[in-house]
Length: 219
Image 1: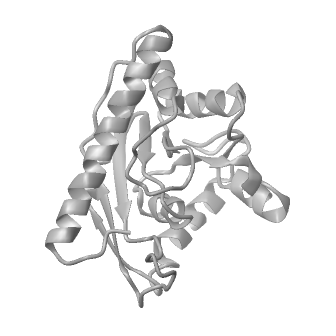
Image 2: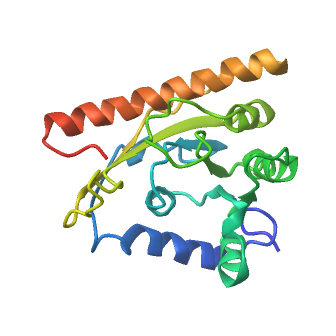
Image 3: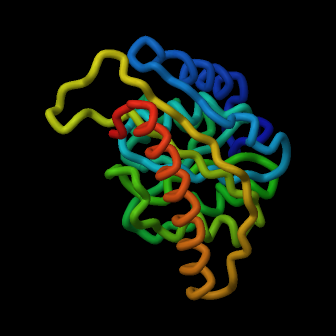
């Protein structure tokens, strides 16, 4: 059985419960503010691209999106009961560092069905400034024609001294949706990847500048 807007085998009500959990369970630890949520297209295929600097961003973005979404998640997370839960709520396991078309084809199926897919183009956690990106996001755009929605998150990383601040301010900024044209071949894919990377990096910088002007730490 397939839940609307999700991969085969997903359980709709469990997905919706997971979104509610993701939206609220971290609010006791963080002061979370979402800017631009209304920019999410109400219908049609949408590829959400987001920066990645901690394990917290996937939960926050999954919870705050106003539509059901299937995120590409590292395959190492899909073990035991946790793995079964991730599959049940419609998340897609992705093997990092390997050529594996199955998860990408699953994501394309969701997009062609008018759903929402989320991906972190950096491929792994880091500074979150999107200095580099992998080709998966551009490939999905080329294969599906989806609209791209960039999302930047700041405030989730621990400070350099390793000490967690008391209820730090976390900001999520949703950018303007756009529909890039990714050309054929490796050249088209590389150019599309750079366009996506540049748009997301610019959004992260916009958020960094705003936080700096308003006295909030960037990590």
